[in-house]
Length: 369
Image (cartoon, rainbow, N blue to C red):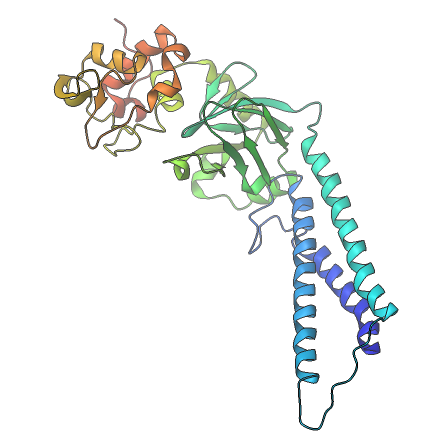
């Protein structure tokens, strides 16, 4: 027992060294963690590995000693049961004091780290985020809106987030950012791209990234929010230069039919024939469609002309599509009749005349009537 007491500080020092060394400065990622692309990521990983390796140490230490005691003090012929000790002050201090110190250390670093990642710098670039089933929309300081998250390379970014329907969660794994987006509240989070990571990443670009002004990442929803939760993702573009970032954001003021589709329709309606939450837009213009009329409980065939498409946008649920499967009235909760301007509805009608062409970049502007 005395040998165990003398060895405990050695084991403890070894665990602390392993905790401090693991994952620190490894911007390329580890078995458990992805790349560290933000300035806060190394500290987050340090705290994680500090706790992880202590748990590993104590698990092995306790399980090992338990197995040793079970073997050494097993029942054997010729060995009588000895009276159990009731008190050993050095032993009780040894198994109480170090864990107390370690838990206080965990609390200190966890709390100070939480305060840091919850307090955005004064010069942060602010982006409004709107989450809804099942996509993301971003509004930038110049009023431009997009379904792509554009990130500058040299400035902190603060996101002001709200939900249009249910609980979502804003999750950027490489940046170690995760924050719930709660209906009726404004959630905030911030990060800044690490120059060290960016410099290293620039040396190992893929062929596609060499041709682009940005490096690609992905935003996820980390809170189950319904049928298409797993598809609730958004592209993230981390720009190589400030000039490229500003040029991209400047273009967002131009509203086009394909952009309106991406912002309002893409999470539920495909343009390639895939049946998602709603029917596909492929070939919808002037096509014959099976619809269900809830007013009289009848299924009938209609022509998807401008009047029908406009009615479907502004009076969601008046007729329910039966193309591919029986669809529920998911659109009513979105309130597009209040969100969309008359000009927006006109542009969506233009989009629906040739959705595949718009997505493929066939058109530069809406057709003039």
